[in-house]
Length: 199
Image 1: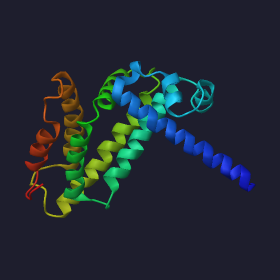
Image 2: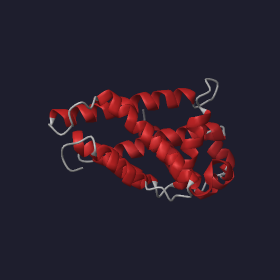
Image 3: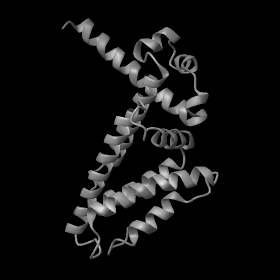
């Protein structure tokens, strides 16, 4: 591969990430329905056909944005390599972060509900996402147990399902209460009740 080819690929990857960042920001501002591919292209300084070269449909861009959001949030969750109680604390902090991203939370909540249909384009994405979320959260509870920080009788697998379910349910309540629900506060109280140490 020549240097020019490598630079071309790098430029293409960089532009793709820029499109995803701009789309995620715009979806957060005006929601999925309110965001147009043309406006996203303008924000990225490219033509509409140029954007379609990377993402041929709005639906393909949407799925890429969801995956990109998971990558960004995953990197943020992993900063410093938290485990056990620290990782559970970071999940509560994620709820506080989400409270500043109404458009993205709304988009995610609507799509998660729609994607329960096996014919939905995001069905597989959400099936895998929930499986991974519960699995990694169960590991955090297991680590908290190994640290001696988990109360007796708390089963890590069940606790993980409860926490992920609570996080998503709180997002719906938060949206319907016009952002009045204290997602992070409720999550913190829930996790604290499962621990023998201060969260």
